Each structure stands twice: as structure tokens, then as C-alpha cells.
Image 1 (tube, rainbow, N blue to C red):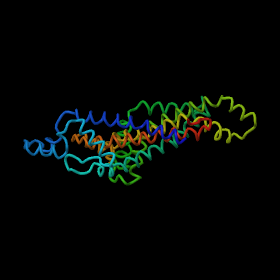
Image 2: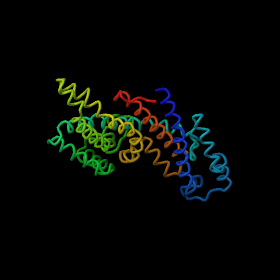
Image 3: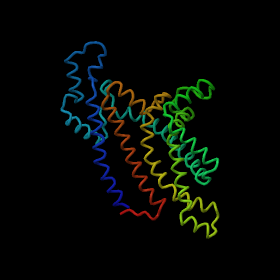
Length: 309
């Protein structure tokens, strides 16, 4: 197990370097000059622009900027913003907990409700419950997430008045509930369909017939044999979905005015704050890699037949 974890950590290094290099290059080829944009419509002073670029290291060749950035990352330094010269790490530290809270709530929602719907549909395959769950998940997958968000905002917020249309306090778990449900809707649909298909296939497996022939209680057959073996593909999806939820929060946070990394990323793109964009994406990549590693380690818990070399 230790050798497997060490090998996976080593494999993450080129993935991390490649991803950050790609984002760094993409940010720097965007049109416009973020330093000149600080003056707005007024003509900038060339001397001040040159001095500011020199102070931020923006006058260096691109490869040197990247090496300086990676060197700073090793020391926990994400650089400073161009406009306010504030540490990027401070900006991320304020926004990241909000997005993590939102993504965690969405993930928990799709985990509990998605698996429950999938189990009910898989056990009652071909019946009313199965058809209802299949139709519901197909509908959710077919509708874009921003449409679901806007419909919830208009119906529950403006028409019924059950929620505030936009989040006023991003620390308030109650106000984050509807944005979290909207964020987790698509994931819920995929989890339900994966669980339903996996359970429907495993119900006819030899080990299930053996368990029934031995006269084991139905609850034990479902929880110890059927559900445990059927959850492996679901766990894979749920693990990798954490990174997807963090990235998808850009749209949901924009609709509901949640002050998380999505809002921070959107503002940074509008002002071409390259260091903030690369910093946010770097954190998201780290979250995604960590989640993938945890998922792989969970395989052995769900299926003891799996061994790591």
C-alpha cells in the first residue's frame, strides 16, 4: 500500500506541472494589458506602467515568470494581485471555504439522495419507481444547470418567497441550501443511474444466487453483498465529482451571488488578474488529484479482492 501511494504521488507531479503550465500560458495569451487596464479610460503613464510591470515581474520572459511562480508555490506563495498588490493566497483563503462548504453540501445531497434513488430503482427494476427515477434523472441531465438555477431562483425566490433570490450571507448554511441542491442536481442524476444499473446487473450475479440459496436475510444480502459490490463505480464517480463541483460552482455562485472561488475566478477573468486565475485553478487541481487518490484507496475497502502492487 505504501509503495502504491508513493507511486501515485510521483505520478501527480507531471500532471500538476502540466496543468499549471497550460493555465499559465493560456492566461498570458489573453488579449489586453492588465496593468494598463488599471488606468481605465485615462491614458496611462508609460513610466508608471513599466515600473509596475517590473515590480510584478511581468516584464520577464514567460518561462522565467513561470519558474518564479512555481518557486513561490513551493514556499506557499501564490503571488500578489496586480490591482491591489494583495497576496493571492489571502483572496483564495477567503473564498475557498465558502466554495468548499457549498460543494460539500452538494456532494452530500447527491450522495444520499442519488444512491437512495438508484437503490430503489435497481431493486424494483421495471416497476413504477424505476420508471419514475429514470424519467426524473433523464430530465435533470437534459436541462442545463444554469436553467435549473434560474428556475429555482424565480419560482422559490420571487414567486413563492421561500428563499432569498440571491445569497446575502455566504456563511449561512440555510441560504446555501438551494444553491447546493442546484449544484448537485446533475451529479445526483448520474449517481442514481450508475447505482441503478450496477445493482440491476449484480442482482443476477452468481454470488447473489448463492447468498439467497444459503437463506441469508434479505437486508444482509442487500447491504453486505449487493450494495457493497455495486458501489465501486459510484465511488469512482463521486470521488472525481468533487473537483467537478468546485469548477461547476462558477455558474451556480454567479446565479446566487455566492462569494466563493467561482465568484473570485469570474472577477479575476474580467480584470485579467492572471495570478488569481492560475492560483484558483492550481488549488482546484490539487483538490481533484487528492480526491482521485482517496477514491483509488477506497477500492480496497469496498472490494477486498483488490490489492495494490
